[in-house]
Image 1 (cartoon, rainbow, N blue to C red):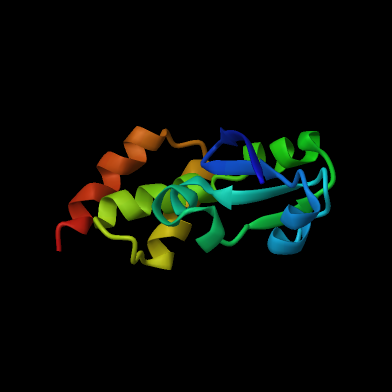
Image 2: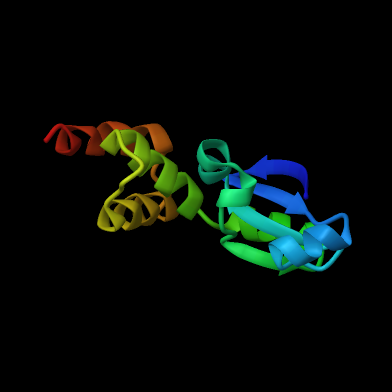
Length: 116
């Protein structure tokens, strides 16, 4: 797999060989989207794609740009101080980001609740 770029918390990878197609369930030339934090922490081989076998880079970029989920998960991990995160927190952060709240504002607003 060849890393193309990171967008909005997602790492976009392209399958470039038959081996990639077999190992990552992605046709040659197609793309998978992984949480960038998962790839960073566990490596590509130990990460699972959130979206797989996307037929074009334009579609992969559209999916990555349209979602605040990856940012919400990374922020929840940061606030919680652990890779074991509360899904309710992720969904609350995502809801706030989708509503237009600034990422830094969300971080400051939710930080006091994470000091438990």
